[in-house]
Length: 168
Image 1 (tube, rainbow, N blue to C red):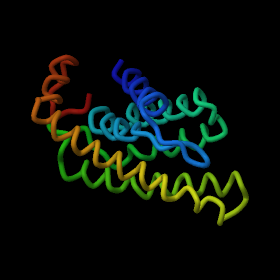
Image 2 (cartoon, helix red, strand yellow):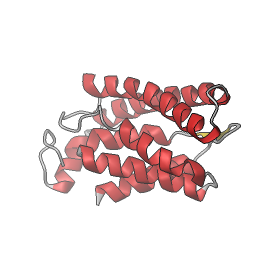
Image 3 (cartoon, rainbow, N blue to C red):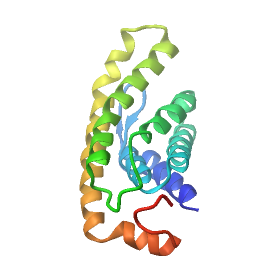
């Protein structure tokens, strides 16, 4: 249930919330919700929510040619996060949000290189991808801090019936 909810939130934040158009796509805040999902859901479910939310956003916004790459890149963003800690704001998740920066920038650079056959052309999108990763980092850290103060993980564990320090 939560996997589908997070996939829908990621899709919405990626495709429909304010975005900044770029030459090959757009900058969005959906990655911040991917980081949140990865801090709440077990790894397999977080990867599915992230990949499917991003994939569907690409398909629904006319960027279907990016969708297979997005599926893989967004799922990879979840690999370093942990949902085991009782809070979202913890050393591992802060590190993971920072580690997501090279995954986003490098992943989309490699995808563009494969699509264009040029190592030079994808460099034009590096600043936009860096902006997206940086903005998502700031939004996630702010959101994690606020949600921890509100007792979000404890409340969520109450709803799901699992202790806050265990994987859902």
